Length: 188
Length: 356
Image 1 (cartoon, rainbow over the protein chains, first blue to last red):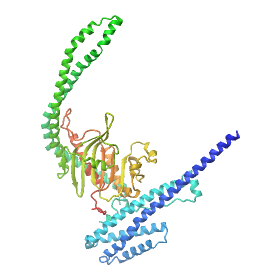
Image 2: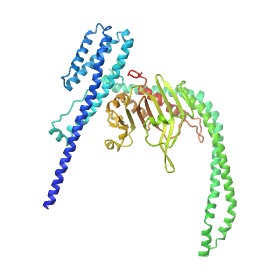
Image 3: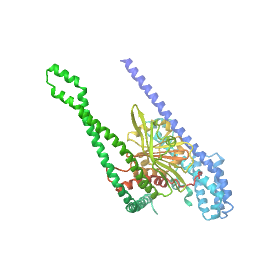
Image 4: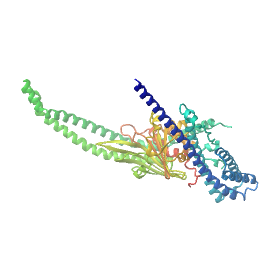
């Protein structure tokens, strides 16, 4: 009888051990996916940072009245590439850059010569491409965050998540204008 | 200010108005141009129908005369044994057997005549089909867009079929017709009916039957993305095990209606979302609802490949039913318009990304 109880207990302990192991690995995999998705987005954000100086140099000859906008976007870019900021600050900065870029694009409407110049058209094409890629990367990030948050909040995996001190992550807010097929090109 | 729902409602109403206008336009063309041609085909169709019925009657009669007699001949030994064992008189059966040769000969004669007849009808059918396609199907294609090229016997090449990676099974029989090649603004496309089959022992079973198209895609793609129809409600839990590993990772998207109808696999999570924007997902849902049949997409290289499953033979003339039917013409028009719908709904003419 004692033997039987010992075997059952042993199986029970083994079951719990393997369950914890599986849940732990699952959570770690989810956490890594989130980080991986964020770095995927980071790559696209860097592409946009690289395009900003070109944009400023092309439009500054025409847009004399919008100097503030150009200065602002340059400053935001410098802050973003300086480093030393965490992911949430990066997200906030990125949202500001998106807003400023959109304002610049709307202002371009008042400068037909600039709009039709070949260098601006090429730049605009590249920017639209990067914006579409950023939007896709944000959605991919949100999908991994959704899986991660389910793991952290749902029972019974939430027990392991609590032990590991995993907290739910915030979703990336996708601006309304990016939810359309054509991103900030709507201004044209 | 309009809400998103109001905008969608407005778009749907606009679509309805455009559709009804197009139906009216097609109705006018049908009455003035297509109906007289279809009426002129009626005589030939009726003659073909009579010949086909005659063939069926002759072949059935021939079979009925040959089969029972053959059965009796093969059992002559058993009948004789029955006579010896049970002492039953089988003289009536035996006398019939001796005369059955004549019946069989008549049956064989009917069969031979029916076969020759069928062979002759085949030629007539082929020429009728050709005339129908040249006069009716070609005209419908021209109504949609006069610059499109139509070939009744052409089909999308097997290279493109394999390049789509939509169907993995080995093809043993590759058939197709009704090839349309054209361009809508900047977007080039190619569409045809296809029927691919695979052989198992002596039987052929269908891999794909329906409309197959490849369209120039407006974005640069490095990997592969597949959108398959959601087959059953039991698929959802199975998806997590990812049976389509060769197609890449399972990609879960945000649109619940889209997720109900389709299942997505791809080599990159980001690229799949770069292709399947919320607007494109909406468009795919709309297309799926319009055609009410399984539809698969793959995005590879410079193209989007589309496979729309349809069980019936498309763009073929009917023989046993009157060809003067607006519904048939409308259905053909609807199937060819698939390309217009896909290009417009998926905004494939928008060339604002790096690919020109």
